[in-house]
Length: 432
Ligand code: SPV
Ligand code: MG
Image (tube, helix red, strand yellow):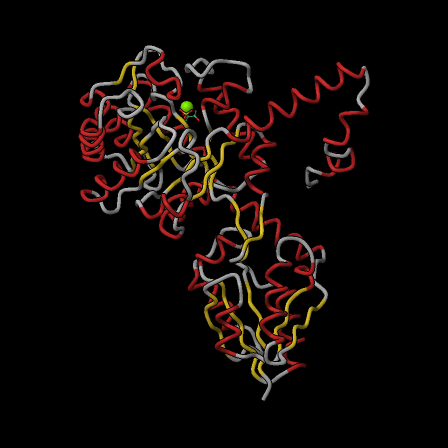
């Protein structure tokens, strides 16, 4: 009896999947299908719109399938070692691109005992394309996008979040994938940074860019992405205004707002004590949190309180006292910020906070203490890491260098080797 294995990562069974099963039955008698677990799906290429149990049932119903099992990882190591299939069958869409690494690994695993990989032509006709696009677009809908952040916090060791400030940076956050020793890596969520949304508009980060304009940026990003958005709400403004901001954001499908406990003219935290900055009182900031939580209509939406005590050199006790008060006021998470160039005070805060609050999400922004690794943050109980400004900071020097080169040589040829080709830019944006 020959065993054939294939793995499905889909919310909809279409003719492409049925074709794989048909081809599999030509190779063997026992057709085993793996269904990717939720944790594995989000590391693969997309989120899910259908629960794991439902995905599992869908596959069980397919004619010709002998057995359905869970595949816990996007790499096939465990499955192949335990099942020893005679054949693994897959669409040939994984012979190029980032999925190639997973395929190569499968080939090596099978070679060890004489198993064989069968790549069959990937079914990508109009109907499959339509189903695929529909699934993608569903993920962008507010009701699906909004709740994803809470799911990611549950499923990911750490939610990797990258700054966005435009459709283009949104596409980078959405589509950038790298291969690594465990398969693939990609960002999980997007940070709508006030610093970067202001900087790209040539404005200082002082709550000068008004909310309506910032909502326009969210809309721009949302039009071309599906990943959840964490909105940098600065101070949240006046309580009377903050409640309207919460309502607007949840309606748009934003997953969380982070508000910082400062008042008066807000300056960027990384100025620290070199400029005048006033921390809000615990009482007033708690009132703001409570007001936001009270008007919120959808439970999935999160209000995360950002503590500036370490930035303003008010000490660890102040930071912890504030964390305690903000959680009691209803904050769904705590962001602790620091401008030290090493992470020890962040670790200390996280360890102390975790003793009192084992499950409340912790968010950090390692801009100054950038040597810290995600593994270290996980070890100290951090749930969300935000890379808050690196895209903007990489784009500016690149653009400036090009501008200088054109000025220097009185033509564009010298700059060209550093540039994306015209062909690439013309085809960068998918057509509907
Ligand atoms: C932002 O990205 O706008 C932030 C993080 O608020 S920081 O700039 O470090 O204050
Ligand atoms: Mg900010």
